[in-house]
Picture (cartoon, rainbow over the protein chains, first blue to last red):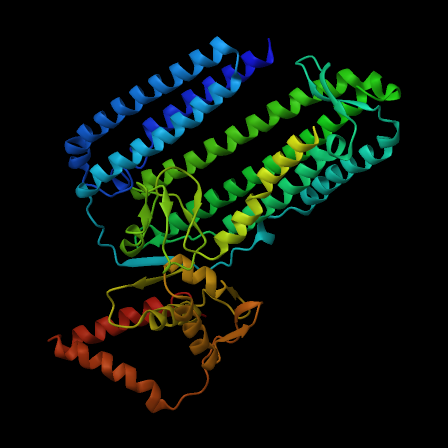
Length: 367
Length: 126
């Protein structure tokens, strides 16, 4: 299959996923977070249902129009960038539509009246969620990637493969340079620092407990947190392995003495990628199960003070609360965690995140 | 193990936090040397100001129950509060009993309530 078709198919698939997410978004929190506001169960079935139906209709219409037009033009002129633009436009449109209907849902909001809250008395530290052998293994993998590339650098040809087809044969080349050889391990090292900061922040995420079923909530929330951090660990280990293997792929296709290992390296790539996806799916399933169990026992799995409830913006998608000392809070809409945008720590995280476009820029400029 | 606060309680939040931790120490749930969460974590979980929790910790430190070291967090230093005069100890009890008497309860009912509370408090303690 040609690259163009792969790109378009991947985009189309991601569009389907995106549409599913936006269809589910306003109702995944039930009456606790209908478009980001708390409503009565009967409102959700009556007036809320009407808003929801109109939202779904508008959403579907905008997706079909934008995506169909973008993909038709993209196929007509064989320009994958047109399909990418259509995807970005449909995402932006979905956000706008969600925001508009969130405003329509706001008058239905009721405020919770809970005044009693609890907190666990166990200190949550990153060290408690760190396995030394895993850290050592990741360090070893990243170090090995750099060591191998440095060792073979003088032997590498002037024309370096930078892209491989599905059977592991190189089909795109670039001039040999530090950027073409070391881009991937450098990106990998950056990602490991990024993931570590993420792990640290999530380990310290706010964990508000209700006055009822406190013990069950404490256990459930701690297990949820632990599953979330193990998901990040799984991703970190996978990325370390994946980047080592892709670097090896570059070596086996350019250095003659290593070429006999080509098939092994290529098979390993598929095994690692499959393992990564399977692991991530497993941990997400686990997190959902923990929440479902908590909901069965306690009737809900999300706890929030009425004072904090008012600080969700954009239909419950972003949180801005200067009064809240927490940097990371549980998402109101959807699973996982999000940032308190009023916290000063957000700037440091944004600075760290700006490394991603810098790496892309580096790759583009050096090709 | 957890502590609970009530936003509608007449006592200030720092008082409630300190009282809850004291009750856990009295019950024997928090042993000597046990580590407490950092001020930042407890404040975030309860959605209160950092100073509120810091004040509660300082108060417990002044009574000799907590040892607060900068950076290392707080640990339970002792499971008995500093010596206080008997009169100091009686004062809050007298206030609480006054409340019970004014609410119209009979002497035997008050005795039953005091007995229940004391039993619940000492259940875990040695």
